[in-house]
Image 1: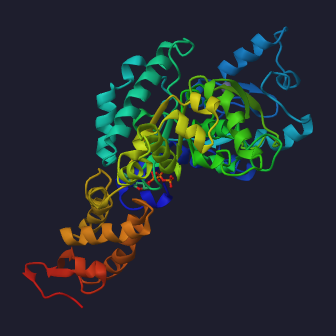
Image 2: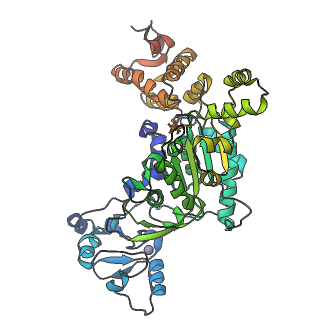
Length: 486
Ligand SMILES: Nc1ncnc2c1ncn2[C@@H]1O[C@H](COP(=O)(O)OP(=O)(O)OP(=O)(O)O)[C@@H](O)[C@H]1O
Ligand SMILES: [Zn+2]
């Protein structure tokens, strides 16, 4: 999902502010020393170790060199030390805090330890409570407000998420009989995979990190190592480890780390990234830097346990249908292979017949698939669904433009034919719903430019002709109708 998804109306802006993965930028606004003096009381202290602000942790303990540590971390350091006296040298040796040397520390860290005080918004770092977890049908109903169609996916996801958080809240994730609810979503590009996950994280109010599997490499190679996804999540949780440990990690384009098929060459890279992810998916302790995305930077490390983190993997899996088709026609045929293959050719539900075996054939290693027990598919969007996406969701694009023009007291209408024409154009691009916004933006630019020029305009109707470039919109003045422009 691109930034563009959030441009227009205020409601959207608010959403953007609370979208977990965009929060970290504003939060880490750090100030320089010069400014610090004048604005002293506007800034609050943050903990040197866990980076939480004083408003969250309670009164900080002051240490030399402007270092402040929250009571929790202080307690932990006391526990970690045999002798009770705290000084900076000792702080250096607390597990989880690593620095190269003292002078580096003094030069770089203390002065930037203050974060702008949030005056109104004191964010609540609440722990998930079993009573807070909405029942599956309620989660689905919330998803329905934003996500069109994909009924099966929404249902499967709601149940998985409910079970997952119920177990997090009751601390029963270790029970061997029930597996972790990690998911694998299979669906064409632009069918709403990322969008579903984002919506879900937002309505559950848990932090979310989104990564592309193609950017991940095994340790020691160029690229982000696999554990970097956990640092991203920690950042999305405002460096609150406990919150991060209840978050969601979405890894997109997971099909790109499949082993190469139809090739004699051994493909090490994809397979080893899959191997490298096994422990993470299952639950392990990961050392990650706090407040930075590189382990080389001189920042404290902290430990995040991935046991309760929900992993969702997504991918388009091109050619998977071929594999399914092959399997189905082999199994059921007794020499009528080609006939059966034809039958499956037109089967729209083909993808939903996917099995673990098919995925293995595709190039996913069994251990990897085994750690994603919830597998479901999303459908490619057809014209009707695209029209619905334009019109129906709570944050639908049309509603956004309508609200915007309503500020100029102009009524914006779209003919049914216009919506169909937009959907048809989007279908041609074959990028699912992603194309919709670009198409609309293109022609709305003129409207948004022209309308405010003339404050006698009361209503604008977008027509199919206008979308197709053979006519104009219908402009109505306040109180009277005038002929079409153009
Ligand atoms: N079912 C849907 N209902 C409402 N909006 C949708 C739906 N599917 C897609 N969209 C819209 O299209 C945009 C693109 O979808 P999204 O980024 O989720 O695609 P994707 O399946 O993750 O594709 P990719 O695999 O290429 O990342 C979303 O931001 C959302 O606005
Ligand atoms: Zn702390």
